Image (cartoon, one colour):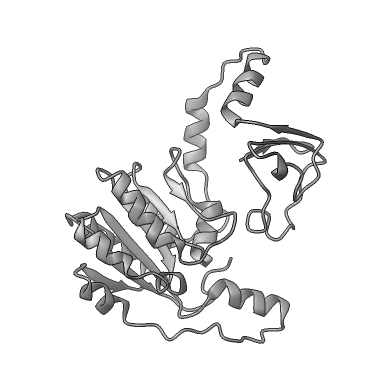
Length: 265
C-alpha cells in the first residue's frame, strides 16, 4: 500500500507495476520512501528517495517506536470511509458489497470488472479481497477462489471474473461441487476480452482483432457440473440471485450479461 501527503509518500510492499500505476501514468510524489522485503524491487519502476529492504511489520514497528504517541478517533474515520460515495458508482460492485456478509472473501480475476474492483471495492478487513495486481494473470480468479474457499470453509467466498478468464479454467467448478464449498461464482459476460479491446480502441484507432468471444451457455455449463446457475441482467435480478445463492449449502453460479463498454472504466 502507499500512504502519504501531496509531496511525500511511503510505499509498503507496493511495487508500482503496470496494473497498479495504469501503465506508469499515475503521478508519484517527488519524495518517495519504499519498503519491500525484496531489495531488487526498490526503485525498480519508480525512483525512490529512500529505500528500506526488510519485513514490513518489523520495519513499521520500529518506526512507530520513534513517533510520539497520538490519539486518533479511528471510529469516526472508519465511519466516514464507509459512508464515502464512489466517484463512478457501479451497481455490480455496490450490490456485492451491500448483500454479502462483511466476512466474505472476494477473489477478482483479471478483467474489466476486476480492475474496477481493485480500486473501488471496499474491503473491511485484511485478506478479504484478492486481485492479481502484479501480473494481471487472466484465468487466475476461479482457481484461487476455490483454494480460498477450502481454506476458510465457514465463510462465503465470492469469485468475480470476466467471461474470457472464466473459460480458461471452468473445470474448477467440479472441485467446488465435490467438496460442497461455500462459493458464489459471478461471471461478468460481455462476450469479449474487454480490457484488450479497450487498449485496441485507445491505441489502435478501434482496429479490433481477435477480441470477440464465442462463449458457451454459462448457465447450462454450470448446471452440467451440478451447480445451481442463473442469468441476470439488472440490479434487481442480481440482488435476488445473490439471495438465492446465499441460501445454498454449496456453490452456485450467476452470469451477468452485459454489453462491451457499458462500464465506463
